[in-house]
Length: 284
Image (cartoon, rainbow, N blue to C red):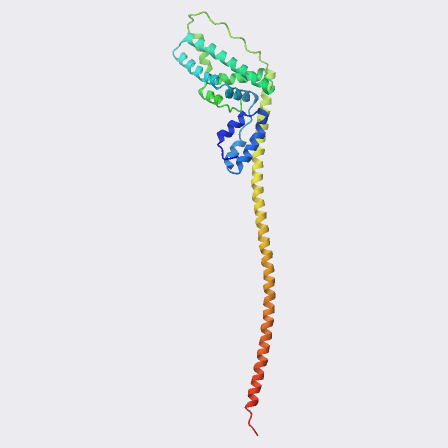
């Protein structure tokens, strides 16, 4: 993989089918490790999205205009609250409810395409996330980015809307009450929460394993390099040892030759001395 920014990699991963997230993350981290270890580390820390978060991410990517309406409605609701415009608050509240139901339906469609169950718990988490995008501009940005790893919860700022609607004078007939939300199942919600927690722990463990494997790979590479250096030095030592032996043999032979030359020179000098001594004897 060529040098790529973290945002580009994160966008790619969170756009993947949910069950392909972890292997794709591992592959991208390996590709980045060679040229950017810090990027590889950040990639391994990306968390696999929960089912609800993944559904919201896909809806955000497929329907960005409708997602943008969440932030717009939130801003208009806050303005209407500040001006105590009760009628407008009720109108905007209906629009918000309709938009969230529509987006929740789109999430259900994505779940059907992916073969993912879309039960009451997942639906509630999806709708809570869209509610959060209306009530909090920061949450709206996160939803629009399409890179959530967990569902969001509406902030307590939603209380002002309910209070404003209750306190504002009614000049028109009250709208028909919205359909009652699905009946809550505490036991199912508890099981779902436990499942999500287990998935989060498993994902964190997978990230830790990937990080540990990266360290193993790096240390292994250094060990291989050191072993190659040791082999090179051993080869050089063997060559030097053979050279030393050859030189010592040459030295021994040279010393023998020198000793023989000394002996020959001494014998020649002795003969010269004898001849000179013989020539100096007086004649009779």
